Image (cartoon, rainbow over all chains, first blue to last red; front, side):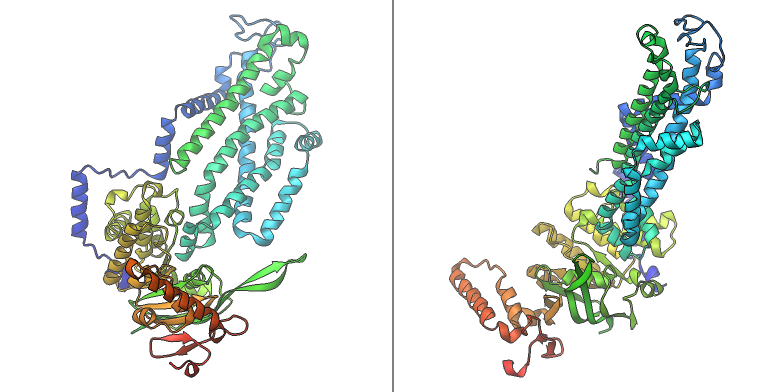
Length: 310
Length: 316
């Protein structure tokens, strides 16, 4: 095309000259990609790095549980309700299973439920939110009515009913939390998209002839990503707590599979609470650590993505 | 004297919905029958008060606003439909500069990505070629090349608007619609951005449609000026014709509102202003029809058109 050839008004020579000058002056040719800049910014945030460290520790613990754990978590290996000792670092529970081993295996349950359920609902919520906000009109109305229907269910009751219908297992809990959790995120994303849709840079992209999907993914999605990530990390924490509560109520993960929630539910009696601290304190601490580390990590990630843009 | 874009009887109406069933009860006549021709290499000014529909015309030309009726002809082809624009690469040839430079630049993207964006849609360039092109664009608007990997928030308002200009020029367009490009900037920076725009026009021979309410800026930039009110043109003419020989009462009133720095003749200025204002009120019926609508344009000479009921009766 004639236009494209004609374009280079600034001669290549001049650009080479400019490059030389900038090298001499030491102007940064800082060609970090988008991801690299974010990683750099994230690593400066100490609290977030600590959060990530603990989160990774939990993941490693969950993956290599069978190598790390000293005993089989479901087997009776010692006398029941014995206090922490050299053989059983965190003591044993009411039937003589090793608490430390159960704690390590419990990380698997909590992380699967926490991470997988959030992945499920954030995919649903983000997709519907983007469509709803950007397309508007009939689809927006339809999706919003659907979220209202979902949000008007008492969350915990629905989980209890479905779990009791399908039968309690780690997968039911995961999918039920995943399929019920999306409306909140969907509404958040929709609101943000509606705000961004009218921004001039989106208009500029439309004026440059980009189509709807290119605009959604190149302009709008990166700008709602931080919002989604924050919501996801809080979601992981909430899911871990929900799983713990369900197991505590006896409709979550079933014994003899260990989860932090059912470990705590086994320690309900007053005598256990007051005299056998090793049966509930470690599990409670693990939930606390998991939730806190995910939250710190997510918060740091958001700050890194948003940068100094405010 | 080659025509680039011809606008024929363009109308943009927005429905007003109200009532229980959300029925269309009335329309806002944002643009109501506008005819206009844009020639190659010239600058056109579109002046009017807020809400007169000047931005709507600009957006309709770029394709950001759906037209109700009328045609926008580019190379003799109607480009009011998206598919038609796509087929002839219209979006490559017509670009836009926005008023709010900050909001027109994606805060999550680096300058190189922002400026290269329009290019990426139309050409396949290697990373090196693209980088060179963006560098040359930055050079054209007087920005140092270390701006390449910075984010929009790291620049001042004037610099951001220059980035906006660079992006608009990136595809080497034939027309740039500039929607109040400098009204958010302070005066010294305004001049700077305007001068860059003028220089680009000289180099590339492109046309501008300059939308503004600042008569000083328009006088500095434009060859032909169209005055607009209530969605219709009241007067079109060359810069000299509009500023020295305004025919429509609305134009006269608008021009008399320009502040003059001339303390010695302060009283006289005030009197002329009063006179024009009085004239506006007494002669309103002559210039607007019963519904308050502006008349159709009557041709005075090859370049000068005014919206009058009847040219002869006004004694021109």
